[in-house]
Length: 388
Image (tube, rainbow, N blue to C red; front, side, top):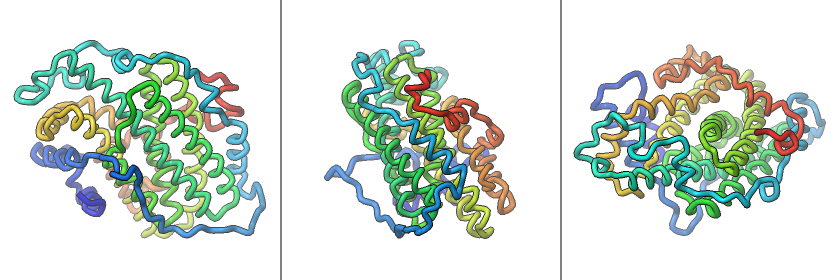
């Protein structure tokens, strides 16, 4: 499926559509999602055309946007060193890491599923353990790829945003994202068994964000959607893991990410107040497409392929997992409130509210994340603050 075909399928509702579709439609939609599997480019690099011109500003007045200026000053005092501020000497057992809080045997997400006639029917404790190890590796790999996407997108924001206060802050985020890529990459290479390729759905979304010619779409796609979901995912893993190095690393990254999301909200609130109804509707559609792409990436297509599970079996197994749907919905707890703050939820006759209702995530519209708000407003680095 090409990027254009994928976008058209999302808009027509044939992929990942909510609102309780009939079972054949749900199965067909899952099959289309499962068919997209990520693989690394043969030459080890991936090129995306950047269609947005760089913009100079000759207005160097610092503090013209006081909230952005304060965030910039906080960011300068909040830096930490990924090489020296984390306990890299900590030994990590991948199997123990994967089994944290879980029982031996079948993954509880499919405790009541009918696995008869599928490859999973013959899995024993060893296969389920390997599945959990691969799943942990895959999730951390997607964190790493997403952070590289954020690194590239934030560098693009420095080039393209018209305000000097925003350029100043975005430059600090470039450093943050480089640090995040560094620590996730090191953890995967030194403590686990290397990384998975970027998930196909995440890769398509990153391509679309980078290729868009409008600077505010970079903000919306990365700062609000991708970073918002990442902040929720980091939080879930942080709560579940007992591995001290990973737990500390995630907590430090979360402290940075809270500022990043706040940066997106502060910048876009001002800009969106000046857009036409048609322009707002375009941003709503983009946000919905991004939401569906991020939900579809959670099917772990690359793990199933590595475990040599046929795609028909994957569709059958995944369709029997209500816990998977619940987990996916919870990941939007950081996105929906911020989209509401931007005015996108109810603009244009509530188009996006209706779509998020269909996805089952609208209940989060007034969700408050006290810890993230404290991180965004905090003074000093997470190391100095001794966050745990």
